[in-house]
Structures are given as structure tokens and as C-alpha cells.
Length: 208
Image (cartoon, rainbow, N blue to C red; front, side, top):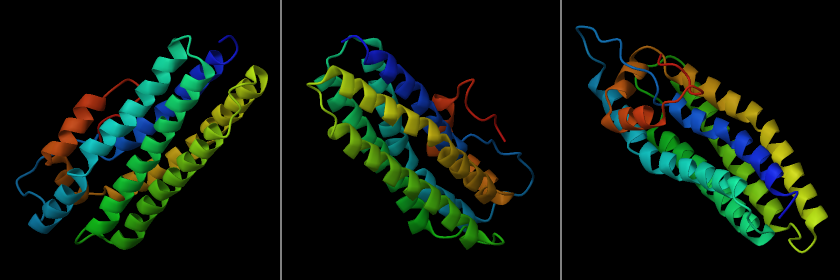
């Protein structure tokens, strides 16, 4: 299908920042020390980190699916179906992580913890809504008209690039939430360590 796959490659490239956002929750290592984090804070970190692996896998799979169709000579119907499912999975993944963070509540003993937590939830919920919107757009594309389909994909890819600002906002919110003992408590969680090690890449944030 000449003319559509190059656009899907652009879309696949724009998706890369999604994985970085999840790593931002898990990529920092503990600085150690004689005294560990507050047990209540460790329990809070566990409730958040335990929700991450499944959603991280869902988001990574969505990225991989779009990258695969970008490399293949896929028909418009296949591109539409793949991209639609990928956007749905990313929307669900971000919403689930936002829900897990919201359910955990503000980290104990952290100044302005509730404000920082709400910023994270707002960022992830916003991304979830944005990807749900992209799913609706890709579902509405006319696969019978090559020119219109390619143009529609191009518009979606452009919006994906614009989403980088939302990913940056989400990353910043996560970094502000992970201050001091919060970072150490998260670093102790096996589930977050697993995601951090499996997602590590040159484009990922360096360990805190």
C-alpha cells in the first residue's frame, strides 16, 4: 500500500515517548543509606508499583504493533485495525496507572503530596483521553480511499507529535512526586525494578 506506511512510521516514532513516561515512574535507583523509608511509604509504593507491569506491557505491545505494521506492506484495513487497538490499549494503560496512583492516595509524609499526586493523575488521565480520541479518529478513516486514508494518518501522526508535550508534563509530574524517600521506597519494589530494567534504553531517562 504505497503512501500509507511512511506515515505509519512517523506515527510509530511519535509513540516512543509513551514508554519513556512509564519508565519515569520506575527508572530511579535507591541511594541506599542506614535508614530505610517509612514502612507506610513502602506500602504506598508497593500499591502503585504492583499496578505498573501489566500496563507497561500493554503500552509496549501497542508501540510494537504500530512499529510492526509500519515495517510491513500492510493494507489500509490492517493498519486501521492495528492502530485502533494500539490507541485503545494505550488509553486503557494510562487510565489504569492513573487509577492506581489515585487509589493509593498521597504518599505519606510528603509535603504537598496530594497536590503532586493530583498532577500525576491529571497527566495520565489526559493522555488516556487523548489516545481514546485518536482511536476514534483512526476508526473513522476511509480505508477505501488511499489518498484520504494517508492524509488522515498524517493528521493523526502530527497530533501524536503534539502529544509529546503531554508526555513531558506527565514525566515532570512524576519526577516531582518522587522526591526524597518516595524515590527510595519505589526503588525497593521488585515490580518497579523489573519494569525499569526491561524498559531501559538510550532514549529512556537516566537513573535518578
